[in-house]
Structures are given as C-alpha cells and as structure tokens.
Length: 342
Image (cartoon, rainbow, N blue to C red; front, side, top):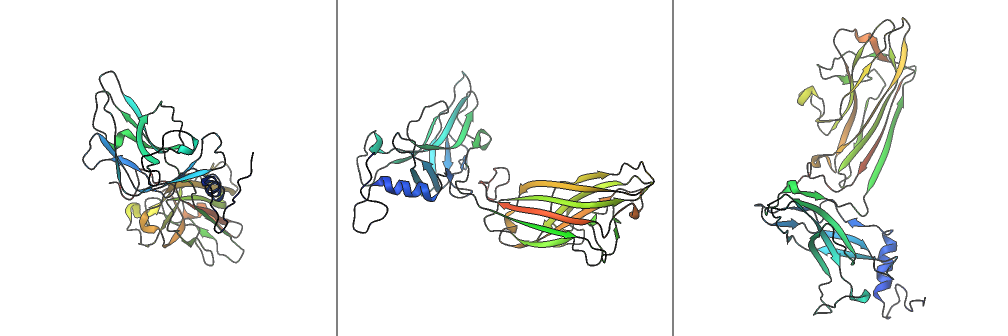
C-alpha cells in the first residue's frame, strides 16, 4: 500500500481527505455516537403527524467503506429536521430506523450535482431490515402499529449513545475513632430518619460539585461495622439524600434534602444475647436533576429505625465508619426524565 504523500498537516501542501479522516478517527479513539446528550434526538412533531423531528447536533461515524478503515466522518444537523415515516397498513406493524447517513463518492456511488456543496450527508427513514452500505448511525427505531399513520413518542425508541461521554468520580471515607462519641439511631423511618451516624467529630455528610454536563449520579455507599445490641431484633431503613437546599424534614417524605436514593432495609437476626456487627451496602444509579448541575450539593448518610425498639439497639462507635464512591456520568437523556420533553 502506497504511503499518502502529504501527512497531516504540511503548510502549503494539498492534503487528501483520507488523512483528515484518519486524524479525526485517531483523535476520537474511533468513537461512534452523538456529541452531546440531546443531539439528534428523535421525537414526534408538536402535533403528532406522519413525520418525526430530529434535533440539531453532531455525530461521529466510523468509515465502514472498504479501504476506509481507521477513518471517521463528523456529521452535523444544523437545525431541526423533519423526516417522513411511512404509514403501516392493515397487514401489520412496520419497523423503521431513523439514520444519519454519509455518502462519499470517493468510495463509489453518485456524486452530487454540486461537488463543492454536496449534499453528502442525509437524515433518513429506512426499513429496519434494510442493508445500508454507506457509513451511517442509527438515531432511533420507530415501531408503527398496524393501520397507523400518526407517529407519537410512544412509538420511538432512541438508539443514540454519546461518542465521548464524560465521567468524574470521587471517594469519601471517614473511619470513626475512639474520640468520637457513640451515637444511637434515635429517629424512626416515619420521622424521616436522621443523619447516621451522628455524634461529635463525625462527619456524616459532605459537599461535592456537580459537573455542568452530568446527567446521572452513581452512588456506592457503605455503613461499616454497624453495631446491634444483644437480645434485640431491630429493623429499619437506610438511604442517601442529596441536594442544594436543606429543609428540616419539610421535603416530601420528611426528607432533609430534595433528592434521595431508594431505601434499603436492615434487620438484625436477634438470635444472641451478645452484640453483633454488620455492614450496610447501598448502590444506586439515577438521573440527576438539571437544577443541580454546576452547583455544590450536600450528600448525607441517612437511616431510621422502625417503632418498637430502643434507640440503643442500633449504633455506630469508634470501631465503625462511613464510606462512599460517587461518580457523575454524561449520557444521552432518558426520554422519561429529560429536561426538555418537547
């Protein structure tokens, strides 16, 4: 194979499109997908019709032509684009893909009437079973029920992934020490629970900056070496709350912060007169509200016991500890939770 005579980039030389596509591929690690979370999102028209609308945005598409390995195309939808979706008939449902397709005459196929201006890029509706030879990226699948011509969001499934998603993570860890005072679990679930564990000198909450680009928060939290008193059978819930505004149990469910993970349950076996210790573990991945992006939030370890057992039945002391891994991730927005559902 001959060496391309002009590498990327030599001043005054004429460069082939291949070296630019190679540079794009290498700089993006061969990534495939859309540029930003809402880019090229396919939705119904304002008043449902036989068309779908595709939001503006960018996309990276690897070159799948023979002889184009190690190259990528970058496509752009400059403004909202409407795409026709064929109606189904009485014989049954029909499935379509909305795609962003690149047609490059260098690798075969017709040249456009205007070689300088194109078009070389297309957003199209094609049969799901179609064999597309040009490089393309599937934006959405549209499943049209039998005898239907009007497309609604319920028929559209987004297939987009971010080409280069961002991710940021951190760890909080605080073993308790002998100087920390022991703290019992005094509040019940019905009361909204409490920061657990509390006690002088023991952080049970911390602050973190939420990136502007974050769409999901992932939490992996541990209450380590929780102490159950002997001859008791306490049970209750533990969870994590977070937000940028503290309220004294006036958020829904008597929360102290607006957002929370699912509640998990603890339940002591209660089969021994001796005290025993167990770890509590919590993992959650959930949408992070747009109001928190770019802000500093508080993340709090929370727990509450059920009525009927003394506060001393559950405690953490100088041999206990708290730990949490948090990760913020950038993803395409889930249609059920996106900020702009239009």
